[in-house]
Structures are given as structure tokens and as C-alpha cells.
Length: 338
Length: 278
Image (cartoon, rainbow over the protein chains, first blue to last red):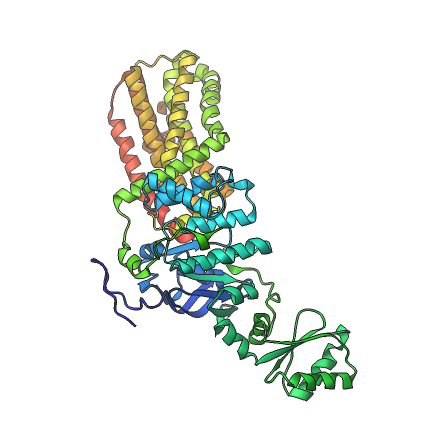
């Protein structure tokens, strides 16, 4: 931990070498522990992904770190500033883009940016030019003076992110930045997020999409039922479930139990049955064990419609870590039922 | 989106930014943020003109209705009822207008943009106080229309222009102060409808159990006792003295004192429950 001297009036802050440093975060909603003791360490300049299904506690965690929700237990620091003790300082350091567009629907895009700039103490003429700059940067010039109600989901999301960047905060929280976006808009959003890091920002994002975490994040924490079940680089997580993975699709989905039996017999390990019908994922210590499994399956009369051997995807990581798929949890999002 | 090819900009340096953070919002910042929020509320009013309908219609309808219905019974004829009634209507319309503050705030708070307001380093009171500053426009409209309607019906205030303006000003101050009560209700109630319901329950006794429409002497003793301490009665009496006699009576002081007490109690309550609740 480095010691950093700060400006007058502030006590010296310690852990400035971490952008986010959280220990044992807890949030309870009416007896239900939505967040149940989460630790997070985000390094400056990285994209950190919080991955989990709906209702896992991702948004609640983010909202606590952003001072939008009180922390029930545990503590958190952002660039060494205590979140619970110094919320006003935290708000100067963090830009928050929520899951739902948090811009004013009664105003145009230009007026929204102007409003948020003025509120943060940007002088009026400068606020106008900052708004214009951001509108250009996010490709919203043509729609700048149109009511937000006419905006597409992607445009709203871009405006929302633009509004979070007015003061160029060093840490940016993105809550499911691409949920509901089409693939092309999603790719553009990814480029924008990478651009933020290139500018020196740190990004903490939540996502339900495994490929998003895989594509963007330097490190990932997997969260399920308010607890962290794994953390590491996407590659580390993948190798945690074996060196490679054999993906089988059976010709007859009814034969899954028979196939599971064969895998147990040959490898002595348990395959993961995917929620997709007739699909099995088998973790392999060595890729050449795949042929043993295939031969045994043919011997047992189980026919296969497709087969592949690959590095495991985060989907398989998730299945292996939590025992259920990312779409297997239909529990209502606790943070939405506030 | 061309962040990647954006013109070369200075790199964001976290340590410098941490050092530059401030612990608190200054008074000047609070004021400027409140005015910015007021700008937003005025924009909103201009884009939803129906928000002005209650402000515009009520003074006109109520003045005419009350004058013709109660005029003969209470004051003998409509003309001699007007000096008694117009200040009463003034108090009533301003109160109804400030009741809408709570309902609108509640609707506003349920929108996503309030989440952003909460995440910004701004004074917690600004998103509440801003719309209230913008509401001064609505009080002014309501109060002016009440007197205008009175003039049309033949009311000739003896207090002259100065007296009438002073009465309007006092009504605006009272409306703004009492709006904190409804703002507080706006932050504690479950829905905009609930705010409306609770506000009505407060508003009706306050306006009708006052001397706004009938002389206190005609009331039974126990009721007269309540009517005498009701802040609305003080406002009505003060406004009558001002507009009918150009007299700044002690009632003005009582009204202002009541306003100060209401603000001192309900402004902090509102901010606290807004912070906890959202």
C-alpha cells in the first residue's frame, strides 16, 4: 500500500493503488441478503467485470459503491476514499451509468448534457461546448435537439454514458451497458468502453453476457446469490474448469442420462448438462481424452449430432461454478423491487 | 461513437482527481444548483402546459362560484362579499397550487433521472428546492388571476395597487413555505396517488376550517378556537388588511412566523426522507 499525500484539509489516504477496495459488503432487503459479503479489488486502469445472472446482486453492489444505497455491513474505498464516510467525495470520482436510461425525458439530449454539466459546476459557456463535444463524440449531433422520447435504445444508452463522462471521472460504473442492444450497437459500445480505459479511466461493469466479460474485462468476478463464487482473468476462470472442454450435442436428447453414465465410467468425473436440450459439456484434463469418451459412447449406442473440443467458454465456467446456467435463475431482481 | 479516434486529450489522472475532491457543497454551489434545477422545472412546465390548468382554472371558477353561491347568504350581496372572499380564494388557490408540488415531485422521483441526480456531487436539497423555486411562477399566476377575476366581478380593493401586490407577495411566500409539507409527503408516500390523497386530507381542513369564506364570529366556540390558530386564517386576515386597507397588521408577522416554523420543521424532514427513501 502506498502512502499518498493529499491536498489540504484531507487526511492522508492509504490504498490509492486500488480503484475499488471493498470488503464484506452486505445489503439486506427485508430479510433477504441481496449482497452477502462481497469483496472486490479493482486496479486502476483496468476493466473489471462483475458477471452473474439476474438477481445475483450485481446492481445492488454497484449502487452501494456509488453511494446510491447505504452499505449495511462491510466497508468500501474508492481511490482510498471511504464510501460511507465521504459520499460527496465519492460522487466527484465516480460516473454512474445505470441499467435504465437515467436522463430527463422532458429535455433534449443537448439540454440534458447542459443540465448535468451546470449541476457539476461547469460554467455556462463551457457547459455548452462540453455538451456539443460529447454529442459529436457519441454520434448524437443529428438528434441533439429532438425529444428523448423519440430515441432508440442504443441512442439513449449512448446519451446516458455521455452524461456520465461530463467531468471525465476517473472511475466509471456501467450497469449492464449493452443489455437489449443489437449486435452492431453492442460492438460500438465495447469500442467506447475500451476508449475510456485508453484515456486513463477505470471501468467497473456488470454484465449477464459471458462473451462481453470475455471480450472486455481484464478481470472478472462471478457473482451468484449475493456471493462471489470465483474471480480471475477470463483465461484463469476458463482453465479452472479443465484444460479443454468437450462439447457434445446428442442426436437424441433422451439419451442424456446414458451419455452421462458413459462419461462417469470413462473419466470418473461428472459432465455438466447444459440447459440446451441434448447438450453436454465435459471438462478434460487432456484434449486427447476426448477420443476415449467418443469411442465409449459409440460402444454404448449413443449417437452424436455434433462434437467439438475447445477452451471452455465462460458459460461452462459458470455452469461448473454455480451448478446452474446463467439463464437458469428466474428469481426477480431484488434491487428492482425496491 | 468515435472515442478511439477522439482528438488527443489529457489523460485522466486518478490521484490528482482524488486530491481535488471537496468534502462538502458550499452555499453558493447549493444556490446555483437549485437555480439550475429550477431551470429544468420551468422547461418541463413549458412542455407540459396542462400543469398550468389547475392554476389557471381554479381561481376563475372558484371566485365566480363562491361569490354567487355564498355572497347573498353571508354578506347580503355579491359586491359586499368580494372584499371578504377574494383574499380567502387567494389563500385557497395558493394552497392548492402548493399541494401539486408534492404530487409532481413524487412522479418526478420515480423517474430514472433522479438516480442520476443522487449520483452527482450536488447538494441533496437541490432536486427538491429547484422545482419549488420554479413553482413561484405558478403561485404568482394563481394569485394574480384571483385578483384579476375579482376585479372583473366588481371588486375594488381599497388598499390600492401596493396593498394588492403586498397581499400577493405574502400569499406566494406562504405557498412556498407550506409546499415543504407537501414535499415531505411526496418523499414518504408510496405513490403519487397516495400523495394526492394525503394532501387533500390536510388541505381541506386547513382551508375550510379558516376564516377564508365565513366570519369567525358565526362559528361555534370550539371551531372558532381552531380557526384562530390556523395559519391560513392569519394569511387571510393579513391579505384582507393589505388589499382592503393597505394596512400591514400584526397578522403579517404571525403568517411569516408560521411559515418560518413550517420550513424549519419540514425542509430538513424532506431532505432526510428523500435521502433515505430513494
